[in-house]
Length: 87
Image 1: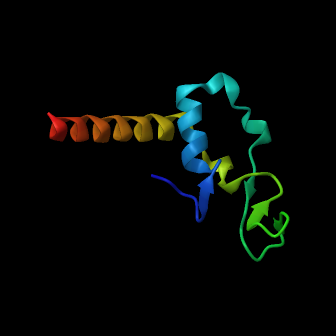
Image 2: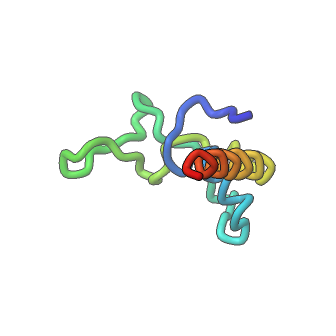
Image 3: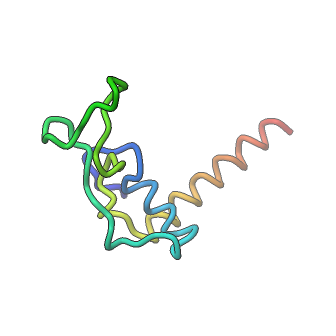
């Protein structure tokens, strides 16, 4: 389902989830694909790791509300299964 080749923050996964949960706060015109190490998009912040200039690490432009719906359902199902174990 997810198509991105890289990502971990504000990426296809997280942006899709937000498009499902709160679409009014997402402006896909501002979505970017950023954070590929080796393409000159990373900078060091006071020597503390690597950061992309946009704050995105992933391919947010691939996000859709339908993907977010599937992700949200999967997460909900997983939480409910874990709660059954505690019962």
